[in-house]
Image (cartoon, rainbow, N blue to C red; front, side, top):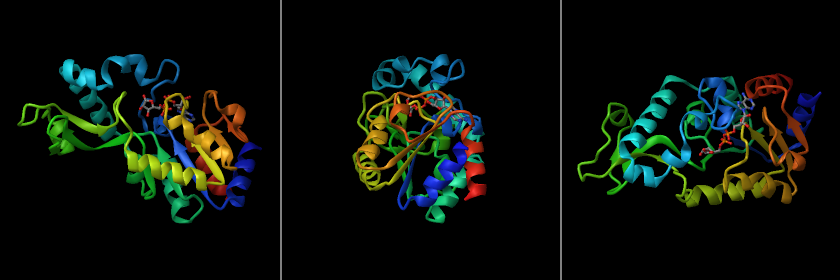
Amino acid sequence: MLLDELVKLLQDSNYAIVFTGAGMSTESGLPDFRSKDRGLWEKFNPNELANVHALLHNTDEFTEFYQYRLSEITKYQPHAGHHVLAKWENDGKIKGIITQNVDGFHSDAGSSNMMELHGSFRTFHCHQCKKEYERNAYLDGTSTCGCGGTIRPGIVLFGENLPQETFMRAEHETTQSDLFIVLGSSLSVSPANMFPLLAKENGAKLVIVNREPTDYDMYADLVIQDKGIKEVLTEVNEKL
Ligand code: APR
C-alpha cells in the first residue's frame, strides 16, 4: 500500500521537508493553475496579467484580477491537510514547509517554519513608493497610492526575483532534508521546481503526491496519484 510506504519513510526520517503547490489548496476551494479545465490559467492568461508589464500598462485588468484572487482567498480557509502538516511540524515529524502558494493557508493552520517562495497576499504595497497598505483596503477597492503609483499584493510576479532570504533558507532546508515530500505541484515553474532534484542530489528520499504526472516522477522514490492530498495526509496521520 503506497500510504504505508509514506508512513515508513516519515517514521525513518530525521529531517523531512514538505514542498507544496496550488494542489494543496484546491480542496479548500481555491482553483490551482494548471489542472485540466479547472486551472486558474484556463480562465485568465498569466502572460497577460501576472507580470509587472500588466501592472504598469494594463492596470485596471491587473487590479481586477488580483482583487478577484484576494476575494477568493478570503472566502476559503485551510483544510484538514493543512492542519495535519502544522501538527507534524509541532510534533517534530517534519521540519518545515517550502510553498509556492500565496494564500497563507499554511500559516493560518499554524505552521511556523514556512518558506513562501512566491510571497503572499498577506501584505500589499505601492509598486512605486513601496508604501504598505492594508489587505482590506485593497479588497474595498483602494488600488492607487497617494503618490499615484499602483498598489499590488506582496507576491512574486512573473519576471520578478524571488525573495532572496527565503530562497536561501529553502535551499538550506532542502540540502538538510533526508525526506522531501512534494504535495500538489506540477513542478513546471522555475526556479521553485529545482528543489525536488536538489533534495535528491543531497541523498534525500523524494515523494511526489500529485493527481497528474510531473516531469520529476522518474526521480521519485514514491509517487501517489490515485488519492487527493487531504485524504493522503489524514490517512497517513492516522497510521503514524
Ligand atoms: N490532490 C493532489 N494533487 C492535486 C490536487 C489534489 N487535491 N489538486 C490539484 N492537484 C495537482 C494538479 O494535478 C496539478 O498538477 O496539483 C498540481 C498543481 O499544479 P499547478 O496548478 O501548476 O500549481 P503550482 O505547481 O503550484 O504552480 C506553480 O505557477 O502560476 C505560477 O506562481 C504560480 O505558484 C504558482 C506556480
